[in-house]
Amino acid sequence: MTIRVCVAGATGWAGSALSLGIAQATDMELVAAVSRTHAGKTLGSVIHFDDLLAPVHATVAEVIAYKPDVLVEYTKPDVAKVHVVAALEGGAHVVVGTSGLTDDDYREIDEVAQSAGRGVLAAGNFAITAVLLQKFAEAAARYVPQWEIIDYADAGKEDVPSGTVRELVNRLSRVRPPHKEVAIESLQGPQESRGAELDGTQVHSVRLPGYTLSVDAIFGMPDQRLILRHEAGASAEPYVEGALLAIRKVSGLVGVHRGLATVMEM
Image (cartoon, rainbow, N blue to C red):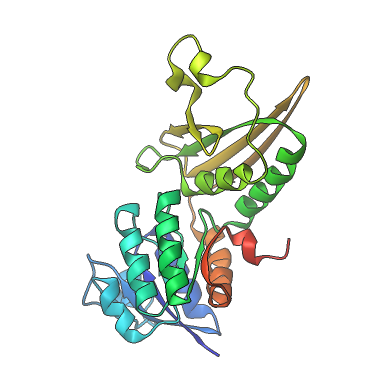
């Protein structure tokens, strides 16, 4: 059966690469796209792929009229939750690639998804190496009691930490909280220098030109240290295969599921 897909943010950096991947997949059809800037055009005319005739609309409410099986949300955190809820209420399953949604956002989305009997698969990062970092970090946290996360991204990235790191610390929190030798409130000097505490983990977000997205998960024990790193380049290609897998798997879910690893055999 062909999966009918709409992509919100289809003309963006990640969304355009995914749209091309959907167009080339034999089991999917890209039926419509969302982009306020390019509404009224065909997607192919915007991303320079003439065979892609999916119409572009300004809102998710408009593309739900095409009755997609799956909506992929790849826009910005200030509108993502509204898009996801509209898609769920319109009968679509949702794949979320947008970063910046909070745990509270996902709790609200889960209530809507459960009520609608639809699935939401949210991944802070669809790259396979990022998924592996998360799995390896979970294993490390079972044996190493102390860790911190460094989150690197381009200077223009507004949401902190990245969706990749939010997902990582959420997974680590389900293993156990990290041990802290000195409580944050007992520090001498600016407490902010120790980063922000997220789900019990200290996270340090670096925003500088030259980075696309990188994550260091650093685990420490006396006289030994483990550093797990995911590092992405400038291309969006690494995220396409993982997103296609999410599209194929999300219809078998109900409620919110966070992380591509939840539908992978690992």
